[in-house]
Image (cartoon, rainbow, N blue to C red; front, side):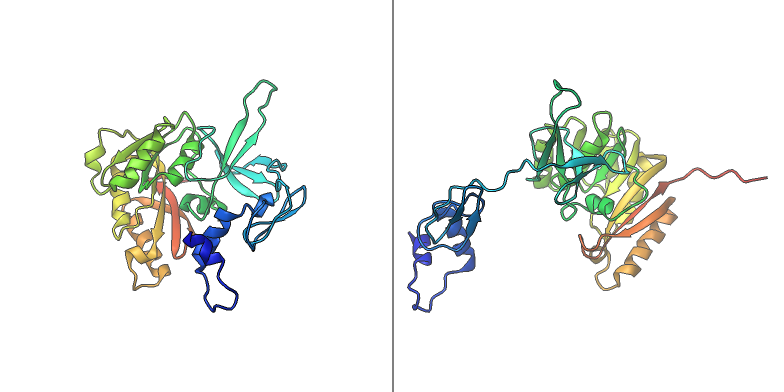
Length: 313
């Protein structure tokens, strides 16, 4: 009752309904927007469908249109980094091949494509949002060296609820493995539930500062990805690299300047962290800023204990 009254205020009363409440009322009372609904009351939103035009919310809608169809043609092309694809359509998007078809992890869009043969099942892709993933922003930003490939074994530090972990799971495929370490129990619970549908994810709810606590669960890995946002994150990466990362393996570390030193300039913080990595035998190959997707963030990609080049005689 109160929601209705906020929309039915007298025009000269001088009272204004709160914006948040108004938008909610419109969505509840009228079926406007894409479907061109039959809303009652005097409305704001206009829906344009195929059959006609309908005003939802406050106005009386006469349209019975069904909105735009989702069946627009989209071309899927392989990205230069293995395990990643580009969906080319009205808006280009970064996508990964869904390892668990029919399931979305964080409400992302999914695209379906026909199989190679007439009897083959449909192939499903998941759109990778760079605003919600540091690794996604790294690939969209144009990183040249990407150590995560199909079949790789990845140690993921700072997995949170598994948004990026799910896409890494798609990248490495059935032959790879993702050891996802998360310290907080609540995101760890969501991570564990997500891993039930993805057999190549091994969730570990433990402190990344104490790699000895989960040493019996992890063998040697090919790549370490770290998104821990801690002041000593370079030391955390080095500890895990010394214990689990093979010689010549790759590492990707996301550095948030404010978490390391909020008083220094971001460029100075990034340079300081790179120096720390070099002292731990982690050789950086590339550095990339994540603007405009993530503010004051940079990603450093490199190789751990690279093989020494033979000297020319």
